[in-house]
Length: 211
Image (tube, rainbow, N blue to C red; front, side, top):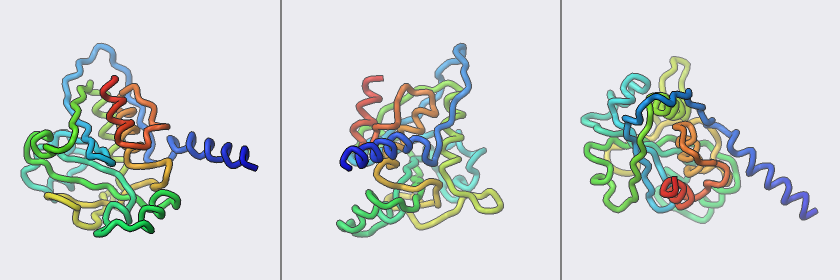
């Protein structure tokens, strides 16, 4: 019985990489130059991706309408209830961990360099080729839920600064977390990272330091 339960848990864990949002495979271009900078932010328990605003105006025009004077956008994917809760309770934590629940995308407008905006967070710069950046942008776009007019769906106001929640794709649960989402994005960007066991912020940031 115990072996059966353990086997089931392993299957769930391994299948989490195939949970939405899905990794986008970048096209191969070995001759290209890594001329684009993106950033990964480690905020303690949570990680997120930061991209130049100019790189997203075409695929996410609603952001430039919602936010003004953004130099960068910070993206974080997570559990709808936990992410937006005014007070974190044991019930909310257990719900987020053990029961698949709706997800949201948190977008924050960053008017300056990421390291200055997040002075208490670990910020790691990553250089990408054109194809790697394009794949990452597609991954981020695919993480948003869209309405019948192919527009991203605004939800509630964000939790700090000039920020906004949007409806997202995919269920949040123990093996499909905010940090796994970041790892999937990095995998889409051509980084040598396996999202399967990247359940914590520390595991994501340590993988980048070793890359």
